[in-house]
Length: 305
Image 1: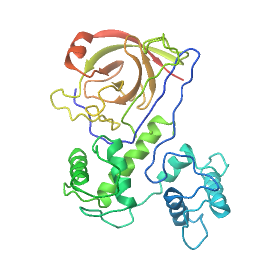
Image 2: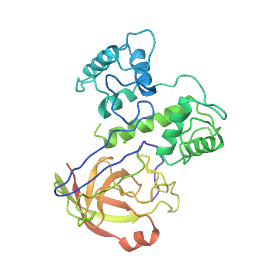
Image 3: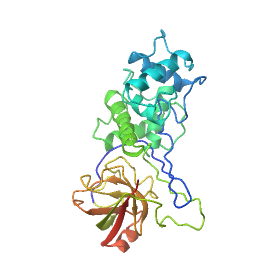
Image 4: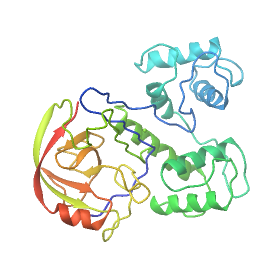
């Protein structure tokens, strides 16, 4: 199966069963950070928040300070009110997701030798997508440039190792897609399935579901003929061989849907395929032997609440 190209931000889904919790952690954003921003916070992420709010007319001070004071809280509440969000003045996952639509390229092209917060942001995006394995040091060295080039190759961009408007837009739009498909609205890179009960396996029955579909299933790997290794929603399967991802027909199961597949476990609908139409589902396997062992069979798929 050919895996569609795409990029996205990191998703971490902690899934548990009976007597446990299903939780989606905060959407990680290089611009606004992973942590909750609130009155009293003071860092670069607050400054980035103020820059966006000021550009959109919410933040009234002459220049961003990096300190989350009363003016910032007022601006956040106004933004939340206009975007039908909970008006609490706290910048959490949902508010960050809405704010991400307004992050724009500032005109500065990043290249080999550059240093600073902007470079660290790019490294953070690339690392979460599986293109960069180095430190988030804010130094645009050769490793960062190579990662940028690999990202550009995988996304049909001009391969020049520079982060200009098009590359910035591609990196950022991937974060938005991931946020929308996973947080109900985070980097799609890793899907962790953890159980609170040590005697319960990942194939145990889910606590609840809203719909059951019987589907014809097959299996695939990230190294099949013609595969790029990156799914339609941007999951880098080669960098993350332990993820549980299935390819679906989006008209039957929307991308980003959380599933439970009998015999496979908890998974996310994160890919598509030319041959995956109707009530067909393709399960990602980390190695060829597992995919061959799976073969072709009818399985019960539960769409989780």
